[in-house]
Length: 213
Image 1 (cartoon, rainbow, N blue to C red):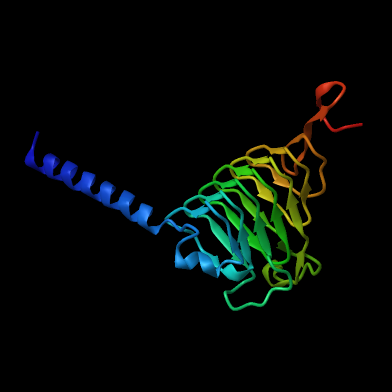
Image 2: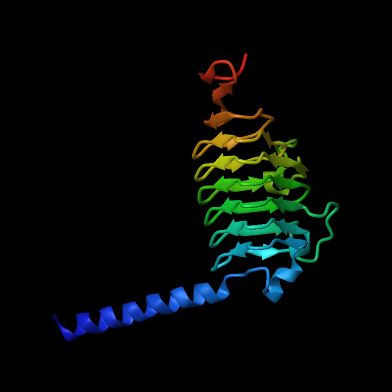
C-alpha cells in the first residue's frame, strides 16, 4: 500500500471521528442553555446535530422523549423577531421522531400528536401562497393559512408534503411522496398526488381497500 493511500486513510479516520464527536457535543438536550429558548423542551428530548434552520424558538414546543433528526428545520413565522398570534405555533408531542432534513414551517398552528414518526425530508406547513390574480407573480400574492393537525401514532413517509388545512386522524400512514390536503379519519393509509385514502380499517371487517363508505 502506498504512503499516499495510508495517509488518506489515516486522515479520513480522524476526520470521521472528529465529526462524530462534534455532532455529539452539538446535540441539544433539555439541560442545555439553548433549550430554554423554546416554549417547551421536554424531558429526554433532543435536537440532533447538525441542526437545520431554527428560529422563533419561543413559539416552538417539543414534547418529552422527542427526537428531532439532523438538518431538520423548525420555524415560526418568517423571522426570529416576529410576534405570533398563537403560542406555541408549532407543537410536537411526546416520543416523536422527526426524520433528517424534514421541515416543519409554522405561521398559524401546527400540532403533532404523540408517538408520530416521519421519514426523511418530510415537509409540513400551515401557509401557502394564493393564486387569485393570474397576472401577478404567485410568490408575491397574499398567503393563506390553515391549521394542521396530525393524530398520534401516525407515520409520514419520506418526501411527503402536508399542506395547510390538513387534519389527519390517529394511526394514519402517509405514503412516501404523497401530497396531503384535507381532513381524514383515524386508521387510514393515504397515498398519491393529491393524496387519497388507499386503505381503511373497519372494526367488523379489518383492513379494506379504498375509503370508508
